[in-house]
Image 1 (cartoon, protein in one colour):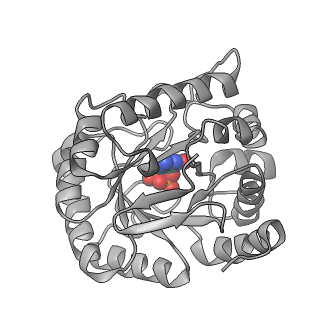
Image 2 (cartoon, protein in one colour):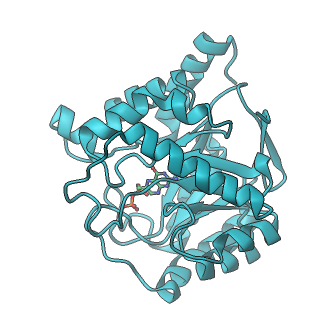
Amino acid sequence: MSRTFRCGRREFRLGERTYILGILNVTPDSFSDGGRFFDPDLAVAHAKEMVAQGADIIDVGGESSRPGSEPVSAREEKRRVLPVIEALADRVDVPISIDTYKSEVAREALDRGASMVNDISGLKESPDMVDLVAQQGASLVVMHMRGRPKTMQKDPRYKDVVKEVVSFLKGQADRACGAGVSKDRILVDPGIGFGKTVDHNLELIRELGAVRRLGYPVLIGTSRKSFIGHLLGTEVDDRLEGTIASNVVAVLNGADFVRVHDVREIKRALTITDYVLRGKGR
Ligand code: HH2
């Protein structure tokens, strides 16, 4: 396994510490922070705050993928994210990722300074996404999702969730390599909450080692998700402890990157986790 992940000009040495993707949702309707950073100036200020708190990459999204959500047009998605990406490219010193499965949005985001495409469809929605990422020399997140956000939580079933997710991630990540995406620019993500029951999510976190054994660096996103609310009986604004616990377990089980809203708190928790695990953490 290559021990470096590259994104833009940055090289992330894997295994040295855990790296953080700070979530920047430029949407009116995201499940936990919808509307808070819809204004481009507020979005830019929030990204700068997350960088100061320890975010290693900023992940900008313009369409909510919460269960039941309706897709937005590429035009509307671009209207939301492009001004923010353009402003951030000049103002923050960390790579910017675009959270989209639409190649049209990804292309313009990459042109304006993004370095990574976070494709929650795992390259299924846009046939030309993989070539775009390869041609641009960009980095790529291949995430597993069963179905589409609008209906994905209607009775998701698997024979063996870990096997199916691992096999999908292997197929799509290998396909990306074959199309010319550099292996040290690919992250795989089991897609917590995307067409999965509470038990599926818990099993994927518990068995994350199986994802790690694919040989690609692993990203995971548990932040404020509904399995935490379900287990603790807490609303979306009261899931920090559950987010921390699930991220710590994910790191112990092999996650290299975590995607979170509460960067300051997660950075503190993972600094201690990294010290204990590896003897260093800064
Ligand atoms: N989760 C969300 C969105 N994008 N990307 C990756 N790679 N992994 C994830 O787990 C993931 C993701 C959903 O969270 P959020 O962005 O907070 O909400 P919304 O989709 O409602 O904007």
